Length: 266
Image (cartoon, rainbow, N blue to C red; front, top):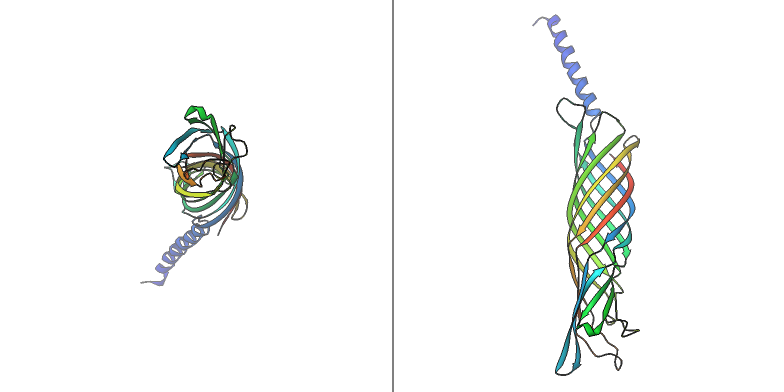
C-alpha cells in the first residue's frame, strides 16, 4: 500500500482513540462511598402483651392486653453505604438520562421508646402501659436511579428502593398498671431482641460540591415487619403473684426519615 494512503487511516484511528479516551475520562461509572445522619419519627403501630398470673397452684388467670403505641416517636439515625454506579443511559434523543447504581447500606436507628396504652382482658384489670426502649440496626441492598436533566449538570434528583434485614433490641422495657403502682411486670428480665424483614423507599437530590464529592439530602420511608419478644416473669415475692414469662408482639414499625450526608466517587 502506498504510504500516502496510510496517513488518512492513521488520522482516523487517532481520532477514534482520542474520542474513546475522552469518553472514558468523562465516565461516571465506578465505586462510591457515602455517610449520613438524620432525624425522623416512628408511626403508631399495634402492641400486645400476653401471659398468665398464677393465683394459686391449681389456677392461673390468662392476661391479654392489646392496644397501640403513641402516634409519633422522634428518632435519630446514622449510616453509611458502599455503591457502584454505571454510566448514563440516554432516554431517547432527549437531554435526559439515568445512571443506575446498586448499594450495600448499614443504618443505625438510635434509642426511642414507643409506649402502648392497652386495655386488659379481663377488663376488671384496667389499662396496661407498656414501654419498649428500642434501637435498630438495618442492613439493606438498594437499587438507585440518578437522573441527569437539561436544567443542571451539578444537581441530580434520584430515587431508590431497598430490602434487607433489621435487628431490633429492647433494653429496660416496662409494663405498668395504675392499679399496681411501683410494679414492672417484666422486672425479672426486661431485655429482648428480634430480627425482621425490612424494606425502604427513598428520594432526594445530590449536588456536586467538588470534583467527585457530592452533598445529598433525601426522604426515606422505612418499614420493618412485626416482631415478637419474650420478657421475664413478674417477680415481687410477697407483693405480687407469680406469673408466666410475658410474650409481647410489636406491629409493623414504620418510619418517616430525613437525612443528609456526603458521598465520594472514586
